Length: 199
Image (cartoon, rainbow, N blue to C red):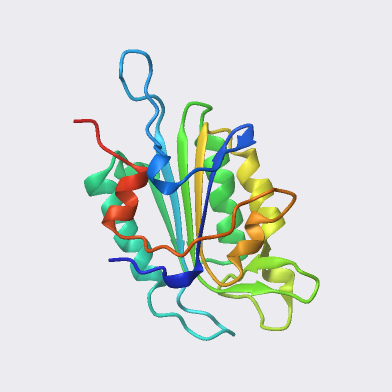
């Protein structure tokens, strides 16, 4: 079981607008009128444990590997469409977003997961912290505004972003009217609420 504890922030983006809903009401399968699946399912999974300047984390890499296993075995993600970044730098993460942008089509579906350190500065800015990010210098961090900008350039119809880091809540408050975040655990039953297989 992947335990995201109290840090898990989830939001569901539907181009061109932002759509909110209870977990039980969201389905990430898209079908045409005949009931056939539409689009390819892509995943970018980022797990950072081995920090150069920050405290080491123990489970981020495991969580990513477990999620990849679940997506392949229980859902409709093909192995070649799951990209895993372990102990990623800022450049690695930006490159991962760029690759998704290049390969995604409007009818596709994209899942992005980040597990690692987060930071929130005195100006109210939130960041993902890459493994080479310094403690007192945010120039190598990935700001939440950049994350959202990169996400919005991906042309896929459905985009699901899961951020397991401190201060992820700032991702949800950049000019958007949002409901308060809820505590959740990312286990198999949680995933079932987002993805379901055609019987």
